[in-house]
Structures are given as C-alpha cells and as structure tokens.
Figure 1 (tube, helix red, strand yellow):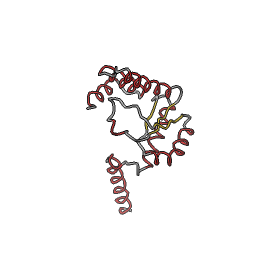
Figure 2 (cartoon, rainbow, N blue to C red):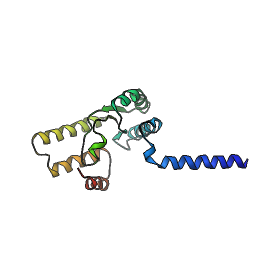
Figure 3 (cartoon, rainbow, N blue to C red):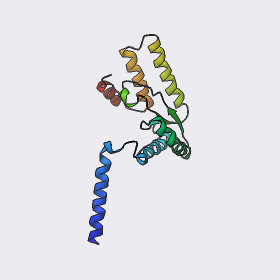
Figure 4 (cartoon, helix red, strand yellow):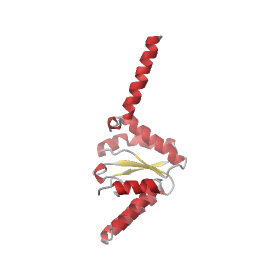
Length: 162
C-alpha cells in the first residue's frame, strides 16, 4: 500500500513538474496543442473570448491536424480558420509566426473583424501611413479582439522591440 502511495506521489509530482516547463510543449506534443484548441473552442462558444489562437504549425503539421481541429470546432459549435498569413502587430514577436500556420477559433462575425483589421493594416502600409500611432491602433484593436485588457495590451506593446 505504501509503495503504491509513494509511486502515485512520484507520478503526480513528476507530471506537475513536467507540465510547468513550457519548453516541453512543442508541436511534437500534439495532445497539449489540441487541448489548448479545445479549451479555446469552449470559451469562445461561451462568449468568454471572441477569438482563440492555436500554436504555430508548419504547413504539413497544420494539414495533418486540421481534421482534429475541425472536429473540435464542430463539437463546440464554433468555427475555425486556417491562417497562413497571421496579422503581425506589436503585440507579438513577428518571428514566432513567420512562415507558420495557425488556427483561429471564433464564432459569429469575428473572422470578418480580424480580416478587416488585416486589410486596414495593409492599406495603411500601402499609403505609407503605418507610423507609430497607426501601429499602436492596429495592435490595440487586435488586442481587444483577443479580449486582452488595456493593461495587458499596453504591456505587450511596450515590451515589443519591433
């Protein structure tokens, strides 16, 4: 009995310690990533968030796992969008998404809002008006679409070096 309890304690401790090391969660740990997508699907469905973002995948990985993402979205009454050209703002390091694919989890007109924001950024760049103020406006609008607080948005923008 004591051996079983000790074994159980070791298993629980090692699992929790392992789960706290975020570097261990790579695309190779697909169960974690699909769990994150399922969690975002649930909170989007409950109107807690407007949009959820998956981890970044290669094209090949995204193609392989898209049927699972589709199933998760259907099961949670939400939609997904496979994004190959992620909206780069001062919220996130652009190197994280460069050449990668991710899935947006959403419902309603959220995808349209996201695409409108991407279009607005492209227009500002084409008009040579994508200055510091415009960058902040686009990043702030995207942060709000992600349901980040103003404090979090400000912290992410201030912490960006791009």
